Image 1 (spheres, helix red, strand yellow):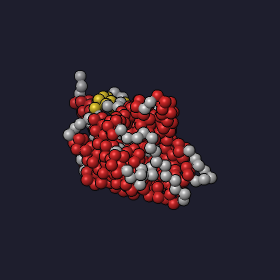
Image 2: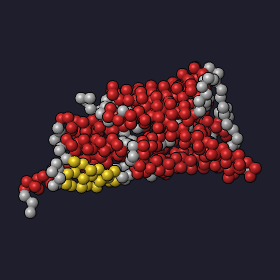
Image 3: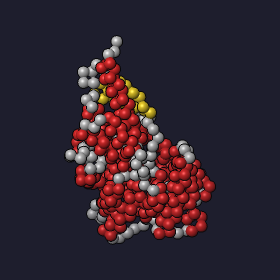
Length: 434
């Protein structure tokens, strides 16, 4: 028979467990990597004198709290809500865990602060729309698109991202949204082939839908696998790959409708390597800002995103094109990612913000989008063209798809290595006393 004291202890554990389950599930929903979720949640549990056992799955999580003597426990299972990426919430929730630990906050106050954090407004949708359009136009320039291509890509991104915002408000499935938006944007991008003929038509089409690439889920998935959270990592990668398939499907429909030439590939040579590296860095800075704003990072991180994107892309361009180095793109991307990762640790300590809030968006201007686009076109050409071309496009497909995977893996691994090397610093930067 339970005494009133035992019942009171049980109720306290129950309330704390339910709060921590909601806290952890919210972190999962806004794009926090699994290690940070686990560490933050256990830190709050320790602040209340409890031991926490947390099992995190792709769509649900289970948490069990024990008191110090292990004679009382409570288990709660929580479904992960559907929320957009939000690096500001990531930072604030990490701060909250340290506030609970250092200030010994009571549960009611902790819950109130949590509600305030999750209710913080996001950036204006129109601001996001404009900056994302500018970012993808600059992304087009990074792949040697001319001013005509940049203008077309700006319009394609504006229309496609506006459509994405409206469809998301109406609760449509993400898979359907990505397919529709990719189709609409690439149809606008294909106008360069059909009517304008601006000189870099393939780049207009190939970069018109790259604002849809799910870069942060891909990076989080790789990071989770490296950090031994394999199930969540695979789930995140699988979800990102499904979105990429939807993008490819939208592009494929456009290519089948427009019947654009499969043989045109633009290559621009720039003799002054130093000037080209600086120019690419500046365009990458604008692209980094626009891609970062989608994830709603804290405003103090935006300037750092621009700087890191500029440095990372400039380094990669220099390593790949300097006559005495001529490094391959995969290895150059790895070193550029490593540079971003190291710098992100330094900045994270200075502004008390998780490194991934500005490191991950800074990587996105280095995504090998044109190689992915060419791989999709190669698949379509294998089916459409005569048998005499088949072997050529099979080779091209494996070349472009392999290069895409190696570049993505290289830059992500290079970026996250410093976060794991400086593990303690990475997970304590949001502590006001640190």
